[in-house]
Image (cartoon, rainbow, N blue to C red; front, side):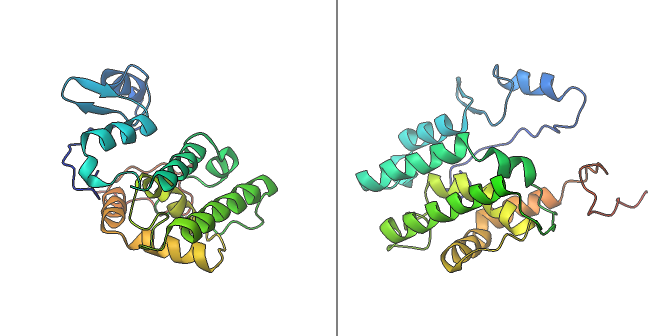
Length: 202
């Protein structure tokens, strides 16, 4: 939404709060994030949110305009939406992490191979008009943004096409804003962040 210039306000919930579940349930009956409240309509699944935004803002190009590209974009988005559990478990989404993954567990290596293949195929088949998976930025790129941060944080070795895509995504203003906002948070849990120095006491 930030990249597309769709205005919104955020409700931030600290997932480590003792009452975090209650806070989320106050926003969404599914008890999960993200959720989008648009007027009196609540949409509580990320893929449904993207479809809703695409319908509400057709001028924003949230999905590729070409029918075949759009179908593939939905496939690869659905794949990351529901898959790659080993990568998620092993490489957490932490903006400050700088932990080279060595050795790489086999099941994580399989996930990495598949993601590299997805990126390469999308760039080769649909990426001529720009530097993103389908040329112009789309919902598929938004879905792989957390993977980009995981690959950077865990120093995953990538071939040229995938590395170029990671660099493109990391330089995106909306991505930089996301990172900057995350780094401005001051929560600290030793067990989750062994690589980080505790904040100075005031």
